[in-house]
Length: 114
Image (tube, rainbow, N blue to C red; front, side, top):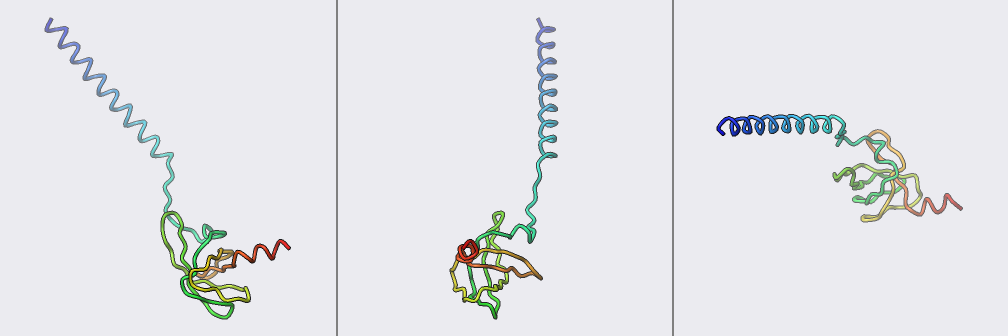
């Protein structure tokens, strides 16, 4: 009777150790396949909507606020459109250059299609 209980205890411990090792191996495999990249590349900005924070026009620079990958970024903005962008206005990023972004209004896309 004692031998059976002792044998059952050894089997239970062995199964527990085997199951633990198996779970650890599975988790390590899944972690290796998972790609975590919170870095923001300037190419990630293209086409994204943003909000004007500091007004600007063709002859001046302003500032826009952008939400990307869970972060809020403020960037220097310029435009080639012949109009003034006001605070709170929605614009789209169409290019990046020297730590600045080039933006256009949503109306720009309507004028291009016509």
